[in-house]
Length: 139
Image 1 (cartoon, rainbow, N blue to C red):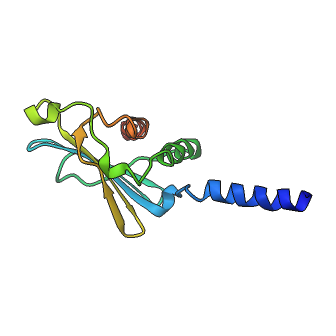
Image 2 (image 1 turned 30 degrees about the horizontal axis):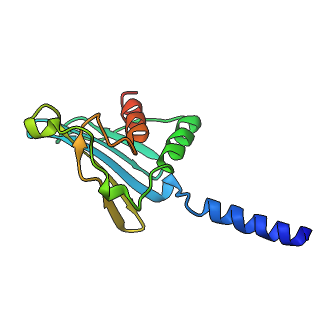
């Protein structure tokens, strides 16, 4: 009976962890833009870069181990199976009140992209992650 429980527990925990994605194995890019405005955050290979204008060079932002852990935890709460169906809660971008925001995730050469949303007002499913990367980008 103990062996059965050990095997069952092992399978359960292995299955529970299989949906976790290592943030170091994906490329993440957040872009907010209009005709006269461009802001980009790129996260790849445990590097965090910010571009403040279209022709600017990327500025690296150094994150502590704890900041990376929090970022990774929030990233793993994003459901990539529904990611491309997420809809922003406001449409101020349609009237030039806010820049267009988009989040792109590339995993194993497969690209995922949101439908677009108002910059700083993302869909609630990804809001904690977007808010955090915007906060980190101001360091």
